[in-house]
Length: 200
Image: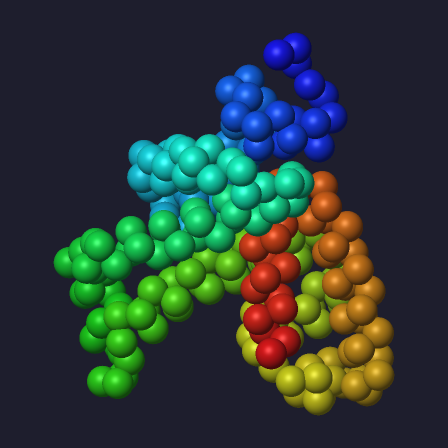
């Protein structure tokens, strides 16, 4: 097969088992998938292993994908689940136990810890993007999505009214969306997922 430039053509050829098309998808997507895993794990070797295994799973299920969006969605979900499984298999290293476990309420489970670690990673990713916003927009989004304040609490802290905070939030999210569009799909999707979860 000659090199195909159109993403939909690549996916169609990949769906039919074309190995060159798979190689092109690998070239397009592996680096951002690796970065996503490494952001969660902080372990380059493990991140590379999980990213490679996820790409292999993608190839095994190639007939299920009809668009680049479905391919990327599968990669994100599968890699995220594999990273969480990796955390569980570790059963907490001694250093992590010493750092985290003494501060946990008795009813908090290992799954609570793992989900907490995952969302702390997302918070850190969001913070990096917020630094690129105008000061007031940055402050509003930080208070809402990093510090978990309500609209009224943010308005009180900034000595203004709730409608003003909503306006700043809207502008900030709009700018944040523009910033995310210039980043890797998976990293952008991860931050958006975190924001959505914060709204619920």
